[in-house]
Length: 93
Image 1 (cartoon, rainbow, N blue to C red):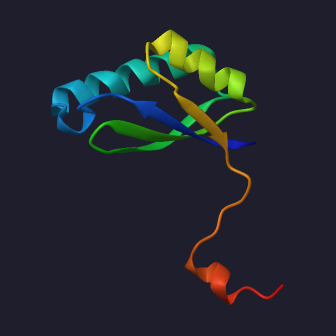
Image 2: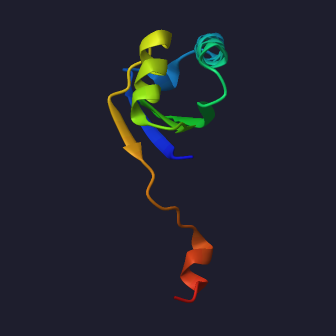
Image 3: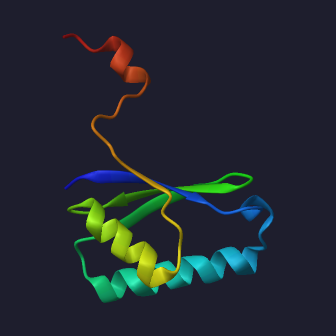
């Protein structure tokens, strides 16, 4: 199933409280449960003014539906085409 990176612009999110983060995560999980097993939240990275989320879903439309239902921005959604890591440097073509 495709993997997506979602960029969410949220001013000051890096300074949000633990309770705020917990509430956002709960909302996301509640929406995901209601949507069924085809969409999964893998992890998120919080920076000063953005959250970068990794999701697995069949398509971008499902990602947008999750964002709309949860009240989250989804400013940019990018499908992951390929993954690399340090071991890629050692791969033989």
